[in-house]
Length: 129
Image 1 (tube, rainbow, N blue to C red):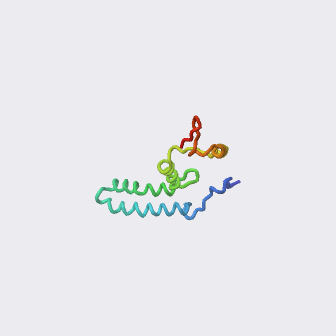
Image 2 (image 1 turned 45 degrees about the vertical axis):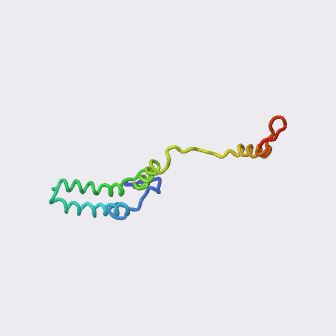
Image 3 (image 1 turned 90 degrees about the horizontal axis):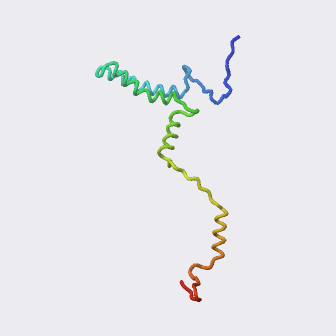
């Protein structure tokens, strides 16, 4: 008997538009074709077929990566933005600081109990300022 497997997590299921590809993949692959094919046809006469094909593949590779690569449910641009944020935009060492409310109360209590700092009594009854 034939059966169809149903995934347990339905959030990972993506809508396919055409040729079993998502809309994002179709757009990125269309951009790759729009960049790669003209390069190949315009340069194959001057640099040869194999060099033109290699250049076409290298020009199309970033668009293929943006179309197909996904890590932890995030597309490539989000992964790259996270890497750039961690490596370059945020500091390497992040200090964990908290406010000690008890310490603030002790400082304010000590300030209320001490005499004003402009008038202090020294030895032998003299007043120094």
